[in-house]
Length: 391
Image (cartoon, rainbow, N blue to C red; front, side, top):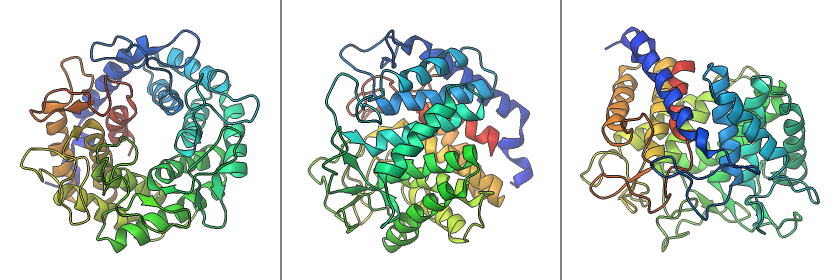
């Protein structure tokens, strides 16, 4: 197999990906919520009761729908208009600035949630949405004023509503999505400062922390960036802060390293490609089927043994994205083989007959909802469909 034989260059495969994007975006049209935000949907596309809009999901819908607009998928424009209006109105905090994680409740102001607004604004700007500039200006001010820590060149974690009481914790997850947002904000503005910040965050967490643990990524740190290796040992299925190393995050980080490696705003250091390949090899070559069943477990301990063995769709989606990028970047047939294997696995277990995605599987590899009930989020699966078209 050679790079020339890649599925990425096969017209039938590319058409299949485009159809998949349309299926996913058509599924989420009923999630538009009167009054702003989006409903969480169940497997049949019906709103789940007692679920409020979430900032990161609204922002991810803005990214997803902007992607649909860019690819000419009908219905995307309506989703994008609603998402941007929701970010500027329903979620916005008119008193203290920033956004409410969950409108109508007194939840902390989370960096994880807020950086997704940067992703949303940048994606909307790329397709010329008239509200994008305002939103981009707002998130830039919030990052510069509250979220970015110039001393450590990383992002802080969370605050009270009035930006007091910063949490004495630093998390890899919020910083990972921060560099995702910064990469896109750099493209939207042409300002190299965003890519420089992203590189500094990645250097600390990947070039130093993950490299130091043989490419298993530490996720949890003190406010001074000391590792907390036993964090949440008693809550291994936590949806945002599980104990141990998360292979899905390794694959996601690898994707962003490749994006930084391709930055037109600075000269990329060689370790970015090295880090992307090493993280991906550790997760896929070293982590696939660890518990005797196909796929990726949720988390492993620091010896690489499975901890939480639940199967989630998003690590597979991230694997598809990064292996497509590695195929393009390296031409290595190893990554082409993984790209095909991951799609085979996704279609066998996660993609249903309508082209929509099961979020989570039980021990028998059937649809479950222990960690994430229903199908609230199409960010990862849409990424799996669009990234191979654009690498």
